[in-house]
Image (cartoon, rainbow over all chains, first blue to last red; front, side):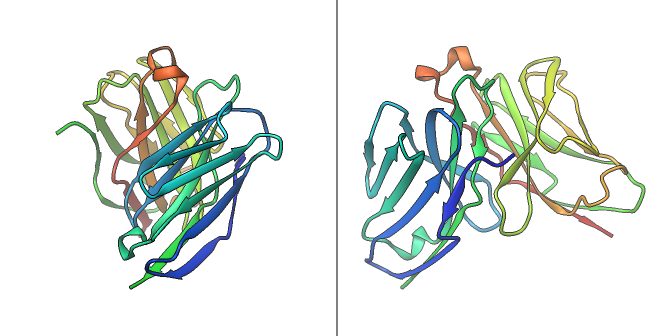
Length: 112
Length: 118
């Protein structure tokens, strides 16, 4: 069963603006990951945040994790048209045998 | 080039027919996964394998079968029992849990196979 729920489902912004997408999950986790999917392509790993971390940065990406609320957010700063894609959170559940549980995804459109 | 190769890119299935999707990786990863993605949806796990000659059902295994005879290969067969096979199928791999950096299960994906019914 799907564990991650993401919102918004779709987001449309202008180039240069920031984009924020949120993910909620249900059980204890080892880590939470964010992936990107360009239309009709496979997923690409963006960033991983461990359960004992609260914030992590990678380039224009900033991820936060609140384990008490079982939620995470992905912030893309100074967005570009090339950031147009779907973004998925995935949780690696504590004690899990190695499966990731993916959210429904947020579709981001960045207008030039 | 290191990576995961899925073939074919597009596949059409006739009623009552079994079709097999190929997934090959040269990343020396032990674990491999098959996911199904429906339009506008997330990924749902079909089958996964942590090691050669072993595999487990995921959330939606009915109507599908797999084999893992080689470390590099994890083919998925969509059988005639799968009544709604039209979807985008994604294969992924990751290092085995005990060989991962700090237990991280980062997955690497192929480009996908789009399956349609004739």
